[in-house]
Image (cartoon, rainbow, N blue to C red; front, side):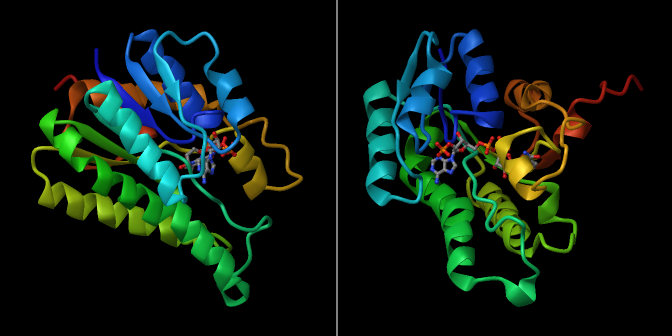
Length: 230
Ligand SMILES: NC(=O)c1ccc[n+]([C@@H]2O[C@H](COP(=O)([O-])OP(=O)(O)OC[C@H]3O[C@@H](n4cnc5c(N)ncnc54)[C@H](OP(=O)(O)O)[C@@H]3O)[C@@H](O)[C@H]2O)c1
């Protein structure tokens, strides 16, 4: 069965993706910083290796690569773990640069480092990289300059990687708004109960993995639409 590594799998989109792939019988390697949450989120899944840790920690990333080596390969890497930045999000003229560095460490440098560590096994499997993006990468929402620019950088890394690694599929995947901890952090004090659950983005993610369209940037809302009949 295929093997996937999903970062940030203890809740939200990452947890939903892990459960969806586990239901298909995939082997999983997953992480999150809080070991107890990760263990709880993956309890009962048949074939899952949990590697608690922070994706910004090089030793943790080496641990993930070691888990891939022990598993004997890798078909799909989902760079999902992400950092929003301050809540509420500041205007760029007030943005603390030390925090911006932490946002980029998590959203840009850690995904690229995992790609560097794992391109060889992914290429051997003609595999797939899914870098989880956001509409904030392409829309200029006031207050979203830190997080949004990090996701824009991740999008461009994905696009260049696709040109450099034609044996791989490289996707920037925008799941759309989801009712998660990160979304609540982005809208502190607001009622976000009208946002869809993260599970609603999973059919689009599975469509990417199943149909393997050309590398590029995809929105869940587009992938979830019924296929054109003519
Ligand atoms: N929610 C939305 O509306 C929305 C919209 C567009 C895009 N996205 C993107 O969708 C992805 C998932 O977001 P979400 O809303 O599902 O977030 P979430 O519910 O807050 O979950 C984030 C997951 O990542 C883990 N994580 C966070 N920082 C980590 C780190 N440094 N190292 C390892 N694990 C880490 C968290 O566990 P720990 O805290 O225990 O580490 C948790 O498992 C992100 O890439 C986000 O940018 C979300």
